[in-house]
Image (cartoon, rainbow, N blue to C red):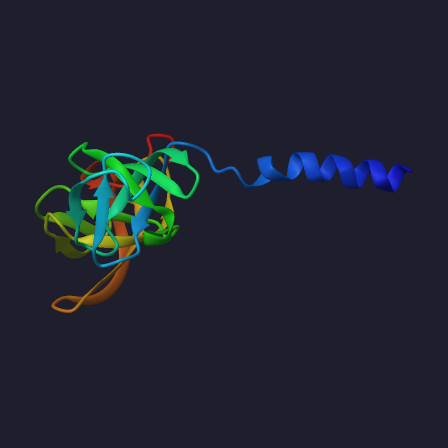
Amino acid sequence: MDMLRKLFLSTILMPSLFCLPLPRFVCLRASEANVHIGPGTKYPITWVLKRSGMPLKIIAEFDHWRQIQDIDGETGWIHKSLLSGKRTLYVIKDRVPVYTQANSDSRILAYLQKGVIARIIQTDQSWCHIHVQHKSIGQYKGWIHSDSVFGLLTQN
């Protein structure tokens, strides 16, 4: 009887284990994705996202649809299959230094221009450890200050 009770309770509680917090950041998996005014294909398309890896904030969920907010604050609905749980960030300032350590006194590896997308390795209150891979600048890992990017919640 005790085993049956545990099974019953775990079945009831299991959905809560898979609920992810809102808001949260994800990135665009597809190279192109329609953004709808509501949660479904029957709703009109308001705009099209065209940059794979772009960070997006999920602010609501309905079935297989996610309401997202982009870097400009625009909102719309996108199917979850077009999103990835990989964490990326978008550089919002020009000439953002990338440091060897989470310290502005450390050596500068490179400067990132506005619009660069990088993969997040780790974050703390004011620094992000990132991996940048770009066809013209190659790839490297380093640290940037979190006030220079979009793609982080304030509690990160």
